[in-house]
Image (cartoon, rainbow, N blue to C red; front, side, top):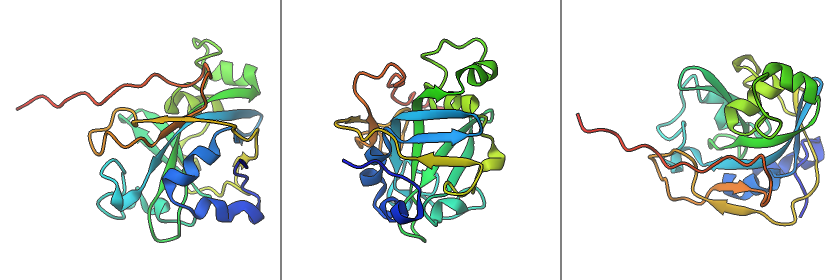
Length: 200
């Protein structure tokens, strides 16, 4: 199975449905400067067809980039403190994205470690916020072109197999098996369901 590259000829592969594109990103390499991370875990989000998506209620200034074109980077703050990154996918005008949940640092380990000095090598990019910290990705990179921008996506080892299951920590559509990961990878994050809301 071919891995997704963001060379112009392969950009049409990103135009498919999020849940179809997501596993194809496993094994791809995300690079920012001297640090490169091989993706081992991702999650698909289908915009206005998906209660778990930021774009479920339509476009906002925050989610505008999710409506295309494909091949852009969507970044956001999680819990008001951590940056997370997504690859925008799907046809232009219909919001969809793939959250980059975890990966293995394959180049620039020392620089990544300087950004996460208390982390073990296993945990350098294990989890979406840690992945962005290791790569030095901030909110300012949102909207960037993953072909020509400072953050770029490159082909990696094509995945021979993957596993799937529920997305992490969601209250909206929590049971959709749209989290995909490479089996046996130490960098894959631990699954946690959403914490139930306390009654007021």
